[in-house]
Length: 441
Ligand code: B12
Image (cartoon, rainbow, N blue to C red; front, side):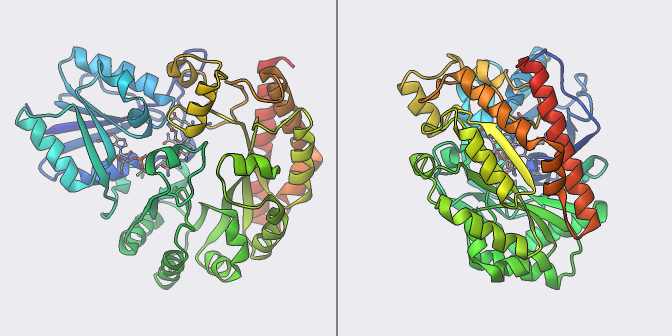
């Protein structure tokens, strides 16, 4: 065998069976830059991101390494079968491979769990070379090395991904990260984050932290922000964070100084019972005041909300609309709750016989778009029917997609920001029109 590894990030099939391809994305996963950097230097490596480029099925690489974030696992399995026919050693990793490892047993030689660093990748590849490959490897979290941005350098990615931590201190019932890391998190050494930001500065002006929560550890965040400022990094960036950042004007001031212009915040619901019912430990009544403080710092908010919780009814869309349109959420991100296999909510709904799919592959195959709202209800909500949930969701989307709402949300004293927000909100409206057409409501 040769010492050549071919890394593949699959795209996925849309519900009409076509492969989703394109030439630009807002944000991209960091799995491939991390894995490429973790590959031992005596191995030749190639990376393909199938969304942008085609897979070379005639590659002479002896090892095929496939990642899977979610729905892309179905396409990943097809790719794996093709390579198995060609007698390659196929290894899998990523979130969905972790959750759905039982689906992969017949299509690959090995599943890697966790975040492998250089030593771990060396172990796997040595084992392949010496014919001792194990069926599964369970590694910890190694992110303390700088990532290989050459993998993304020639791609049109609006916010180049960067990472300062893995995991989240919260343990919410619906969250895939909680299901894997169980309220644990690991911080990355600041020197590597800064090195990566410098690599990004050479290829882009914008970055996006792909951390689940950059506010996991306040002291670390402040040190990181000060390092970004003192290293004179000029990138403008966004990140995910919890709403309690709104009680911390000092951190907000440093965030702004360090280039942060957009914070993505999971508020989920405006009903306290819903929030407490999924183990998310924040107070809904604090949202409006905290949003005011965040906006005052000059940073805009993209707010995640879900519909379909146990206390939601056909009245809830109006309540969500009233809230979102009365506070300063510049980009609303709405989804019908998804019972992702592996999460606590999935097991609870399964136990209560409320899932509307029997095989997780049915759910995995059902995403209609890449990065768009989940507008299908895959379970029986408690206080309404699945169809009522879908109708209510579209009604909410429609109200928020009105021209007045779009323009109101996009107002900013910074013209560049105003144009960006308007673009995002126009996409929001387009999504609504697409969903409405598909549902035929
Ligand atoms: C960027 C991102 C996206 C981008 C991806 C664009 C692209 N094509 O790359 C966009 C916005 C399009 C997206 C879409 C979706 N995403 Co997303 N996304 C992320 C995000 C924020 C960052 C991923 C990342 O870079 N992580 C950092 C890297 C270093 O970690 P990693 O991916 O886990 O990879 C490491 C290990 O898993 C392992 N590994 C991974 N692959 C392999 C392969 C091999 C061979 C080996 C050895 C090891 C290995 O090593 C890597 C290096 O440490 C994560 C949250 C997060 N912080 O992870 C969510 C996340 C992965 N997404 C999630 C979800 C729900 C989705 C969507 C379903 C949302 C939707 N409604 O459409 C879709 C599904 C898309 C799909 N492909 O199937 C969930 C997980 C899903 C799940 N399976 O449980 C996450 C965890 C967010 C969350 N908390 O809910 N996403």
